[in-house]
Image (cartoon, rainbow, N blue to C red; front, top):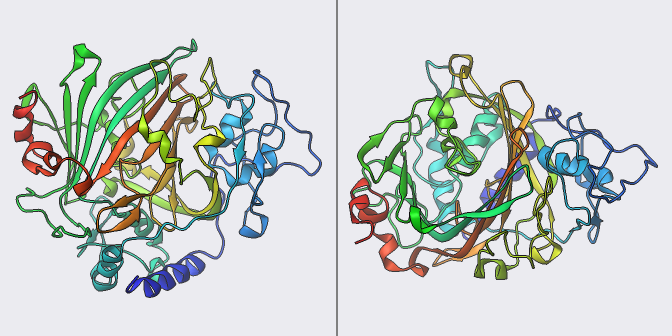
Length: 471
């Protein structure tokens, strides 16, 4: 790829110089003691190392060997290579836990190349991007045009956590991503129900690095990313639609439109924590990782670590969402009371991905009334896509854990890349409320592979389009 070698050499140097010592994440577990007893597989919560104690440092020299099968019998041996939420599911000391016969098969690491144009834009424009400290105490980028804003995070180690965050905030995404989204919820009684099927359309209108599109879509109205979500099922809620608009100015609060109100509903800080009806998403998490109003957060760096993630799914999973009581049984273990519907080995092999671990907490002036005391992002080093999120309540206890199961897909004219909303399966374990959300994707598409109607920004990326619903 033209220009890619130079960029990746810079990224490798950044990773090696960024921080010589990485601190432990609050909430990480210790490595298992040598000769420790295996965990018995049972439907009862397994006993063992707690998921909220600090780990030893890890490296690729200690990485999980190719061909390893992780189960209840040996999970503690590999706990340091898992995000906190995943270890909590194995430890069983909260309401949600892994299926008794869970098997996680470890395969080879498969590279995910970034698009040529995204790398070329990085080489041309990254040098002009700076971080400016705002009166609030937070930071926001200036001079950003397209590509990776900060490929050389070692330029100023004190700002590196913020630079890594904005690399994730502006990770590559195509102009259009569309899929049928199916949401399942689980409750404390063991009930699992398909609560919603929706038409999900994500439109990026500025800062584009996509073949066949300008960097800014004409008549973009200053929007960066627009998320359109129209309910298809159940029938009584059909056509109910939300439109969430993130602005090119990252410091500006999103505008949210509903079809019953042809005006922006500017959400209060408290409303950013309001869940979508019936599931565990909140408005502040609709970007699949990086929250809105990033200038209101203090960001710290907790290390570059090899960790287990599932990022190359069996593409057959996208042929259908699943049934009325759960995601496709051939790819997911059945959920039950306190048991999550975890991916089966048929969904794909797990990889040792290098991830940046960053922690975010609200600055004191913005902390009062906010739903989380801390947000931990696990950001893939190669794609800058957040692969997992751990969320802590105001008292500092683990509240929710997000884990994304991803699959690179061909973007027309671009190659393969992870998208924001397209080819993924998502599990959110809400430990505090004993609730669970699983979101599955059906027939994801990108750009010209989608029906041409979805590229119409006036229909799917504008408040005016709400008047055309059901026409």
